Length: 237
Image (cartoon, rainbow, N blue to C red; front, side):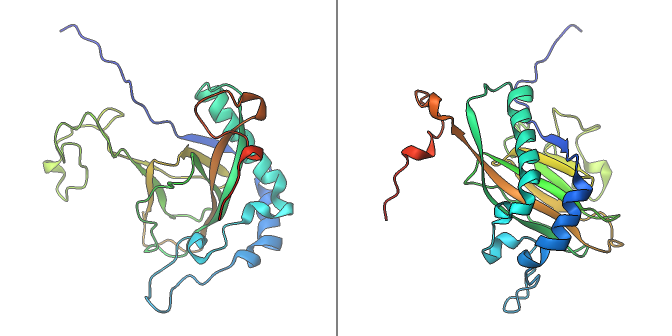
């Protein structure tokens, strides 16, 4: 049988390595962490806050001591744009907000969500204990799934999974075990969550999450797509 197929709608996840990770980790724990510490459990509802975004302090990127770290993260964003996605060098990279992503027990999973206000999001992994949670991404559109449930892999009995082997054509969820010192970049509209892998997880899985917007450099305001330079913005109350 003669045939060919084309993969036309991939989603790209970028994994970078922060060169000075141990230095930044020490700075963070010695100087920064206490300023962004927060109550893990909401005493009124007994729910667990797995991110500090919900407590109204998403400004880790404004810490002067971490300027070199965020400079390195933004260098990875530029590499992602220009050398992976082959976008022209016409954008400034703007870190809009940053917060802690934290789990201190196997049951503290981050639910499925997207980051709607931004273009790209990142997670920089400061501390990854053994048996800590995976990050997972969902292909919510999945054009190859001609009916709902065709590609599901959550059946209790493997016999009733319809797919004999998962690949980039038929998977709806992609799992990753991040390593300490990695920074992961992905489109903010990509649905993601964390998944516990073991009841023997002890310690603290800690990352800095952040949202990024792309703003056209001032000399490129003639482009009809994308945010123009912020000097031309005017805010009304």
